[in-house]
Length: 375
Image (cartoon, rainbow, N blue to C red; front, side, top):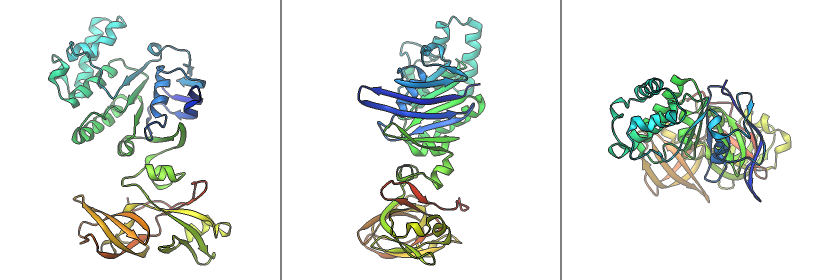
């Protein structure tokens, strides 16, 4: 069993708290991604699990064993860093074998493991080379191979793709996902890139200021974020937010943002209830739920908002349109057939079945869509 548990874990340096009361269970064989902005505590949580940082209080368990006082070398984990950390004077083979040699592993077993890992990663032909003779993507695969040969209980990956170009990032991302499926081992992966998190994770844990905000499947985080921070962090471009208030009655309820007003559907009315009429809120809608009225998907419950176009960005299969409605600025992802130019006046179609409403004081989600049947 290679499950991992954080129990009330705190890591602090004097008055500076890096991770605050983290409680998180990571089941055996799960691919968990820790995400958040720089300084949120995600790498610190990983380093504490690896034993590279001593925790201030709480417990960390690997399997059923509390590892608070267990040296890093005895925790049966393997870590891949942002920097490849390869020995430049050694061949790929020797880099991958080095850790096993230190553990006095028999030579035949070392060769077997190195050859198997190289085959999995498609780097058999690179074994005689030295790091300077390889590309960044090849070096990253060697770093992964060095971790694989150890057959650890848990793989820890700390922003391993940060030094790769965009094309290699996509390619290596897919390789790591396939590697997880083949090895059937627990992976804990740290990144600030929410696209990596959405595409790779079984579950995503979102952190902010050392505090875990939400841990759930990618689709749940995307469709049902707990708060404004999670809603804005997950998704690209980010969710649009507007300050407003809930007005009207239980028969006809609106979210009034000043520059425009949208009538709420029955689902939102049932979630909000009478007690939220008059409440100050933050209204959220994702860019893909704002459409050009001529090219909206079938089944959209739309309400039109008078807008002006500031900037357009053709992305190939879609257009990012930056717009303004009164004093409110927002972005829409629209059909590439939409002929929109800077300065155009257009009525944008907001899909009112896909809106989120957050309390303005607590920033917690108080109304969220039923779910997405169109994705």
